[in-house]
Length: 271
Image (cartoon, rainbow, N blue to C red; front, side, top):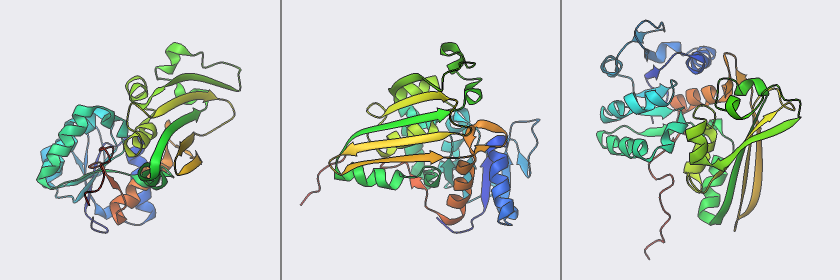
């Protein structure tokens, strides 16, 4: 990936505004050539269809708009030879979506994950090669951060308990039930044991004021645990601000993980 490339963006909600803040801190807002938003929505350099975004000639597009945007817009960009950094990683829990993006990469673009948003992904990749048996991701968030999600159907968010677990299952099940809350869990699954073998726990906790993500892995390599305390985005308590800044740095400097090859079966080398 080129350093300091021409940039595009999909979406200008809480995540998109955090990304723009990151570019502004670096004095590089001029590298943002176009922002794709729905008609009637406002954004810097706004365009309203994917063809107009492609016509702006970005070299890297940052997706900040949710699962539906991944399904609708990323493949055309890849076919046009444009790299796309995907923040809504949960969309990749759908095998068909992932397959369509990998096919679209034949046009020259690459679908990428912003690795810097999740400490420990590089270690998880190494552990997978060394021998990985168990991976669990636990998301702790304060009760108010679960409002507007399916958690409200199974949990009284006014609970007085210090912590209350309300979901435990596979990464695939978590992505289907809580699509806006388990992007990290899906990324960990893609890098490690896959969507069905990776375990996810969701916890409503009064012990935290901002999101805490915990990655635990065990195998032939040994074991590790990462705790990631990340400030929530100013406009969205469900999202880590660190994700936005990771997207900016990956777009500028490289380092994002290509989805091609992630979660592909490991095969013995041919000697």
